[in-house]
Image: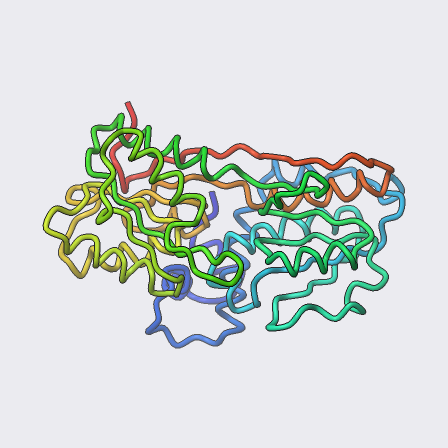
Length: 342
């Protein structure tokens, strides 16, 4: 487990600065470049475990026919990626795997328009990171020799995709919380954009939460709040759900960034975690272990998703013709923001 001190020493800043950056302290005066270095270093050090290094040791470039350059097409802008370090983990998985294989990576971040086709010229294959619109998916198919979607699955059987099953992970999480005798289980998340229109309860985790609660006969609309995602969504939605007449005794947030905002809201409301309100989340980004109290969360294997996407491209280069859909397992990581499972 990486420590704040190790991150601070690697970047050349104080431990206090690292802590405030990882907690997204808006009052901290620090350059965008330094903020990026801290967030990326935290994710990189968390990734560079002996097990992760061993996965790429001894791999020879000669074993990768047809590989020279891979294009990474991101669904986020660079500034948006910094706000969600989970996707830094996915990118690092791709970049580190390619570095071990001596494959060049060209990064293409999201803009208001479709990418210029020349950005993909010379690329043996493309890895599309995150959720892309139907128009973007069609464009990628038409401009890619080989294509893999990472952390996203298209409806088509013809596409290579690798992701985690967040719906199943939500089911596991709620079942575990229910077994811990939490009875009023709340959820805050974001509205999903489908075909350009926001659907307040269209995101996979929200759908899975609603189904579990309805199947158990305990669903309450007031305990499931979403809004179009902003940096303050976790804070504003946590305030809203806790100011209800009968608030939850445990709050599930759609990702760890929203949990950070929820922590701030609970502090302002004078509520103790987990005594007055428990919090559980998704992703297990590096800051989750440094929150006070440390955050219980569902670990999604971001780096391994990136690595697997590269390996799936290599299979295509080697002649694989049948498309694959790969689902990687998730893990419940229990810390002190909830009760401990028995």
